[in-house]
Length: 64
Image 1 (cartoon, rainbow, N blue to C red):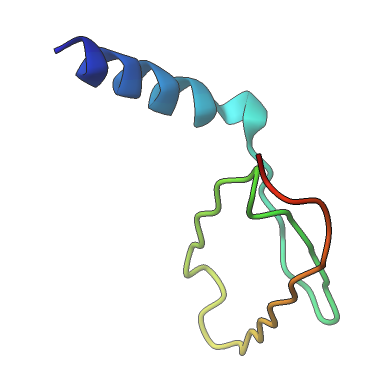
Image 2 (image 1 turned 30 degrees about the horizontal axis):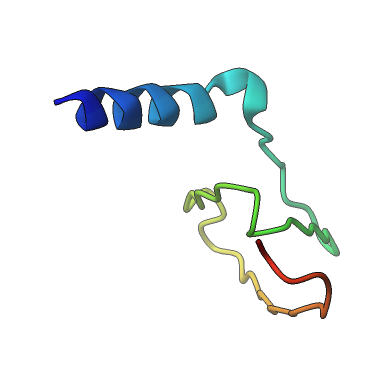
């Protein structure tokens, strides 16, 4: 039970609106984020347009 409450707390904390960024897509828009520390939620609000996504992995420090 305690673990469930902790997960609910962490989820509700991490998804607060003050921690979010909403982007309005336009031609030639580029955005980057670090998947190690960000939550990502894609919305299908670009109907009729094509989006392309490329993933890159940058060599860096080892996660602890």
